[in-house]
Image 1 (cartoon, rainbow, N blue to C red):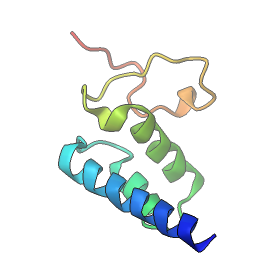
Image 2 (image 1 turned 90 degrees about the vertical axis):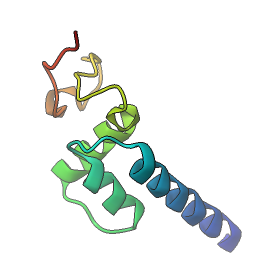
Image 3 (image 1 turned 135 degrees about the horizontal axis):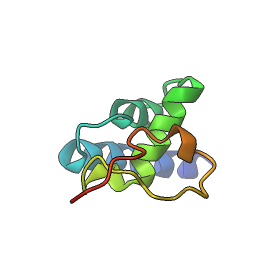
Length: 84
């Protein structure tokens, strides 16, 4: 079990590095990093972090995900924002 924890910890560290290198400064970024560091989040922070993760760190911009079937869609921070 310890090997799995270390591997997961390494994966989380790698994801933090990826976010810091390529992730857009957007709502949910600091929350996702905080989660990956093992720090507690409130419900709203967790939702913002999940949207940031699901949207690929908003690498295409701060846009609506256009997935109304998602149970978190009503909380999506950039809902209604469409690109050109």
